[in-house]
Image (cartoon, rainbow, N blue to C red; front, top):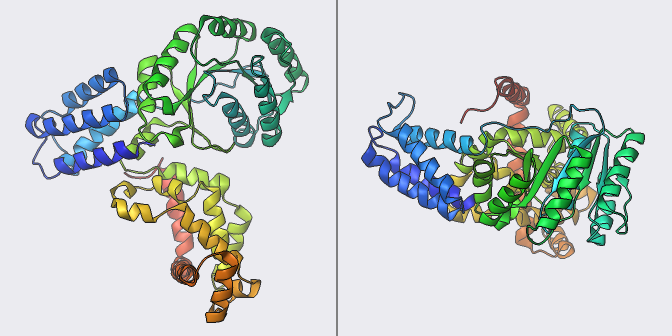
Length: 454
């Protein structure tokens, strides 16, 4: 998400750099470029106008700190305003009510609502240690009930059975009683969607809301629908006392206009964003972190939090102990690192969170892709255990056999061996003279101070 917007804004900021101070003349062109970049990203026109006026008002004649050049000062202003329009700070779920806390999910058909129910259930279960029950009140689409049943089993949530012959209000009342008897902490209710907003749907969900009095009423919107996402969110916001928005399918939206418009138009905070198809691909929404990613500053805190959740601690500690004892970093270790990287969403997801990656030339970015790393893993899988432990024994005939077994060629095998050698050198430097401990102390220090410098 935001690839095009990030690229255009980065170019704009480079043009401002080198000026003595921020004046009306030297920011006029920059603001014009920012306006075009936001409109092309499908940000609502009213939001763009307000954003530009705020930046202009703060930028004109502003004294630039000695630590910042005009380009950096302008970036800082834009960053602050991006954070402001996206909600200023993270808005967490309110789970303080008497259990089971009810979360009502609303949205159009095809927005990713049912999948989001399962993703949210998994997030609450794994990160907040909550016992979660889920139920589908969508009696118009029988497949929705079966879909939720399957997903509930996959994420370990308690599934309250329902039937298309039942009335949605009856399903909701029974689900509340059953979740209570099961000592569930949270009950997530999936509601019916339509292809477009209509009065019948709104009347039904208003009745469900009145019967359940949910603590959270979340509207799930497909980010790829752009301006339609904002208009639909506004319609639901007018009809229901929404407490927040979930932006689904943001991984398929290269423009990102919905993320920049929904909060400003509806006044409701974005609480989560869906970043992939898997059930673990739901992330809390942090406006400051998203603004940093848009401006190419990266999002190192999210990267660290993701690593803490998804990296296999046992394997990581085993590797650390092995390297500290002076043993070599072999191909099996390299294979494990590739697997850990895949668990974190792949190399492209990780690089997206690193500062300055947007400034890489497009040609360089295109060479870094998950397909290359998957191919490397297949090559290593075609080696014998002995070859993985002792890569130096891999001669010409072994390379031919490995290439045939992996469906690649000798050049691919050589590339894997070369990458492994480079990784081996890095690992040796990190573990020598207490490098690993120093690195970990540095990360802990940054976390204690509240984050990473821009």
